[in-house]
Length: 262
Ligand code: GLP
Image 1: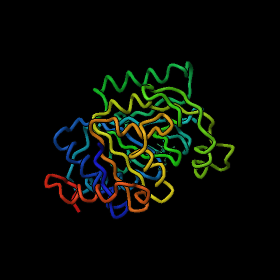
Image 2: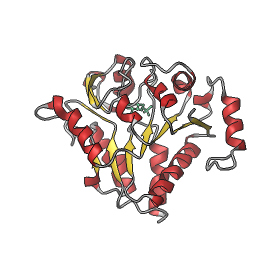
Image 3: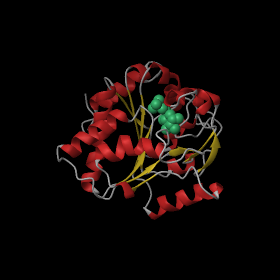
């Protein structure tokens, strides 16, 4: 079972996730991080940036792979996930820009961009820690409900729900691309450690389905149940529909080895 941590708020959750990542980088300076976009990982990135600024961790050898990218949005456009990762991760964490990859969402032979990205990840030795958020419909990265549990990085159509959820980043809802390129559920399952984060009441249903419902392509986030090393960190609001919340709190309080005790 995934370790489930119910944090006080996003800020504590970000501190917990960042401390797991910092400890890994200290023991493995060439750590390969899987990077999520969206608002959810921001408190983790902020905590990591503080550790870098305070000289607690040296990230000069860290490499990163983003989860996904919109199709047809040039990398230099502010809404591209390449731009988002540069703004929200590479710059504040002072990562080496050439060490951070995003899937290619434009250019010739776009249908081979997924296989190219898989090859780059394999060359880097695979992902050590994959940071994940969850969509309100249970999607992770851009694996919409129904995605194959064994899927590789590939082009996918976005659901209207996801386009609507993400329209806040665009001038008009019509500007949200209809397609994306995303790491698959099979790709994500190969990461050696997964940290899934979820905050807010609007994520409570998806989180409960992912953690406590059946493992199913209908809720792509449910693959965390199938992963040998998954840490799930939610705030109180996202925990409201968890049937086993009391058990998760008890397990956290009583684990003498846990780095995430209250
Ligand atoms: C997008 C991203 C996901 C992210 C999700 C949730 O669809 N592709 O990686 O987890 O949005 O976004 P937010 O964290 O802003 O709620």
